[in-house]
Length: 153
Image 1 (cartoon, rainbow, N blue to C red):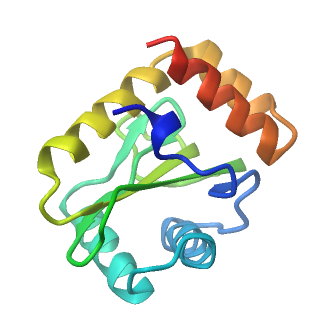
Image 2 (image 1 turned 180 degrees about the horizontal axis):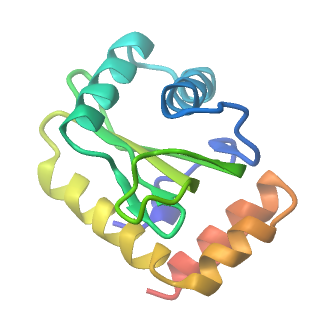
């Protein structure tokens, strides 16, 4: 499964306003609810925060991939957020996170969920790709950069 098949152009925040982990996650879940809907906003936030308590999804290099599986969700949803100033996310390298891919997946989609996590992780290992995402000016430009990179694989 490719990001191009899942990521909606409208599911991107070019400059998150949240100043800490919880605020950033709340902002992305709120926007995701507005853009996509079809799920319980409070429950999704609760499940994502539960996952974060198990261990941070901040993987380092300014990247975090918060994710959760949610009962009642019909398909995988991906949301991208960028924080220009960075957010403390308890990342492995102890640096702030700037680039966030939030993944919400149906409860029974373990294999697909893991494939999407792996794909996003692979894309974000590329420093040039991360730099392009940070330099982009608009939601549309961010979307185009993600899709262009996704097509390479």
